[in-house]
Length: 183
Image (tube, rainbow, N blue to C red; front, side, top):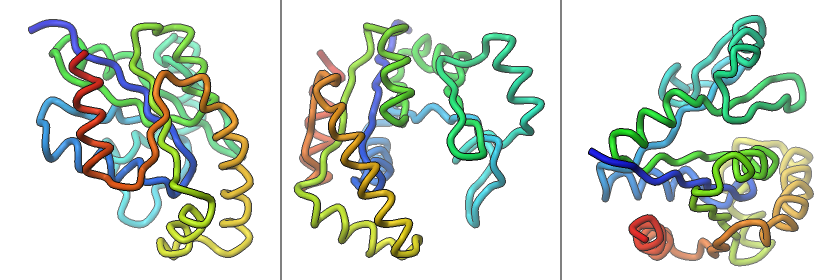
């Protein structure tokens, strides 16, 4: 086949990353999210190998020491990582491999993979982000407040990305991503 396209997609919690990825995948069968590794327990409805690869801390550390990850980090009490093997396999198949990762992980991967297309999704405004987080009804008010504070920190890193896209229309964002990935 040929060489695929690596896409780093970041953005604050509630900005719509999963919706954008799911919509793009539905429109383009070559789009695939790289499934990250996590040491936390699956949440209700999460499927091993689809949402994350759920592994023990010991297994995670063994993989990290073996160089299996493009980037990895500890977030609160759990470890998360982007696997090299899955990423490289998708690229070798000529696919669009999406890394849905936070700003810290994205900055790490950008250093290793300057060929990546880097995109940060932005909310139309802070109120829209708050509304989306509240509408999800998955977090308590104090968690929503923390996510909004984290959003400010993440959005401060937007200039590090090649493209900053306001997610005010999923269809518009997907059309733009498709155009950027073809370049």
